Length: 259
Picture (tube, rainbow, N blue to C red):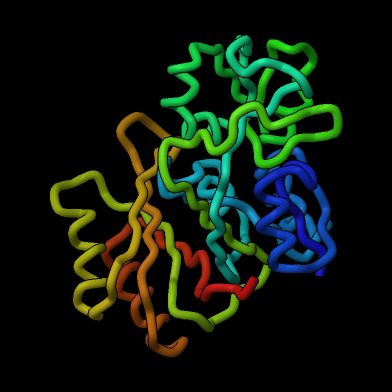
């Protein structure tokens, strides 16, 4: 199986993808990795979807909404964010730090105390590529040649990221289901959709709203819920949801992939 991932072999996405196996291929952004699956260039992509400190990864959610792709498995890994600089550089003399927006946010307290300029780039790997002088730094997993860890473990607490394996075809096995749906802009519309899950006795484990990109104040909702039934029961849930939403899209039924 060929698998796309974000960054290069120094990234957290590489660590997650490598733990799941397959022939790995690097891409410069989450969107590029997802597009590679949709276009048939690779069989799957392993991409971050949620972090316990900073919440959902918006680029992944938007890609799942826009493309015909399905979550086939998930895995959660501990994430150690380090301040990387040129070998021999002084952490206290760093003036600018590059990294993916999620990584910068996970280390917000440390970076604000350090008093540096924070510059968002497409991946932690791309951030390390921007290190050119002793005053440049990056937040990343492990240094590249000629670089060193200047400060270790600089996230704002215990740090874990959930990754999902995404493919072009769905499976109907596993104990979790992900969907995205829209509702009418009227009182109780979201409640009506959530009541469907309650009526089926389904435990919602996550809900996230995102702009629908069609107008101010209009949102879609990403929902994960635990599910132990068969495909026929799941289709019944979707039939009921369709009556309480403006659209509903199945994003996958899946379980935890061993690593």
